[in-house]
Image 1 (cartoon, rainbow, N blue to C red):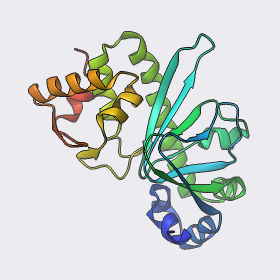
Image 2 (image 1 turned 90 degrees about the horizontal axis):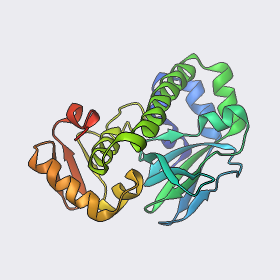
Image 3 (image 1 turned 45 degrees about the horizontal axis):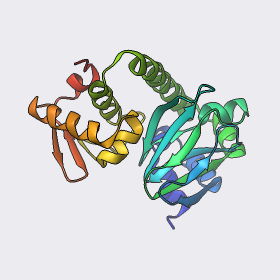
Image 4 (image 1 turned 135 degrees about the vertical axis):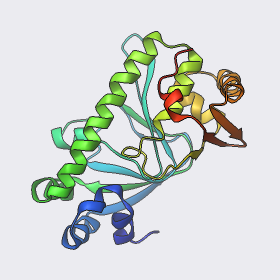
Length: 224
């Protein structure tokens, strides 16, 4: 188990906090572990924590009344999410599923609001985070309606290289084809075919459970 203060200091939101704010934040943190395939929460559940991924990969998704499944985002190591639900004090509007062995950092609501009301640096981070997340969610809806499966794979992959939402990722990510398929809403076979074509186009390099992005901007705007 990692010490609470180490968790706080490693978090992207701690970069603009004072020492006193980091110490106060660390006291409101805890950790939980989830096995592959486990539900962290279901849509309509209350989860009164701001949530970070200490290690692992989480799918943020929902199923419509008509039965259609939609993945909004994936959250990987270093990512924090759920600030909207905590701020509005409402049940989650999506399912959270661990798609690999995952360890979460959980900040209780009282600590989150203390930072929200007391820390200028924390609020600057929240504004950036909410802005990036909103752009991602809007793009998800657009992509699901108009893009080919290969383009969805390309753009879902590109999201993991957003430095605000995924601060631990450099130019490569450890992710299996099965995991990428779950996030993009396509089969493993489609992911495999799509990645091979992206390799042939010189946009990515694929090794066992590892993808290196060679041309990120091209992935972000991929439409073929």
